[in-house]
Image (cartoon, rainbow, N blue to C red; front, side, top):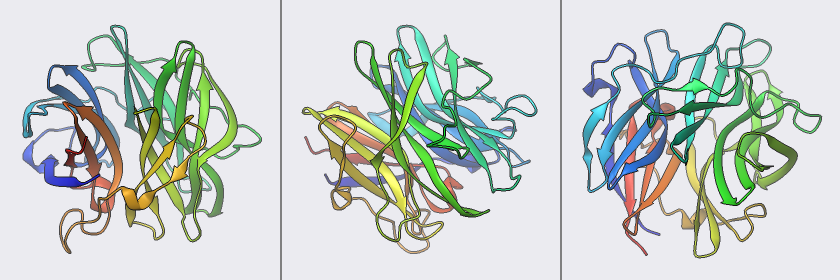
Length: 305
């Protein structure tokens, strides 16, 4: 795989919207029709709260934004709920005429830095607005997974009555500001109710703190996953792995073939949170750069067959 970087395609400073003051975190992409795709992203308001909006673009001319949401399509949940301090898109799945948005709910620090749990919202208008499927997370704390970081899901229907979710799961908190986490998988018959066994898909290598934000394509009888990994806080890199069954994975990070940009550039310190879609035999990777996406959403294109 060889990736050609296009650069920042979606920046908060280009749109003077009341709800979107900074960031463009965790781009999450769904096809609308033809070459038109919708990017859901996490923007922050002046209170630094995370809200979900969207932008539309034509992948035949991806540097031109066609439309952008004038208000958030999903806002923080009710006081005391798992998502009362912010929401972030993670995976969009079309099921008939319904769009499911698997998202991340944020809660601020109590004894640890944050809580990040997986929620689900439903749209019947292609994501112009959403209603919560549940006010509670759709993944559960268990004896194997007791920490409130069950997050960043990517969901795929692999056959009738079998869905797989790959998600980020905390193994421990080293201290109140320093969690370690890997990528695990769960199963479902309908994509709504999930069975977790705490089994690991992508584990940490020596000196790694985290692997995060999986995105999976199934191609040539192979599951292909992009994600990011971190050895030093604030300096994610993008990794890559393959699997024949979707559960047992072999890391092949050197084959990701995308790295940080030039010094002092928007992605010169880190690249993270990839979301890959395939369109007309090309792969499009939407991703974030420095400071976890503070400057917006970037794009790289791969033309290898």
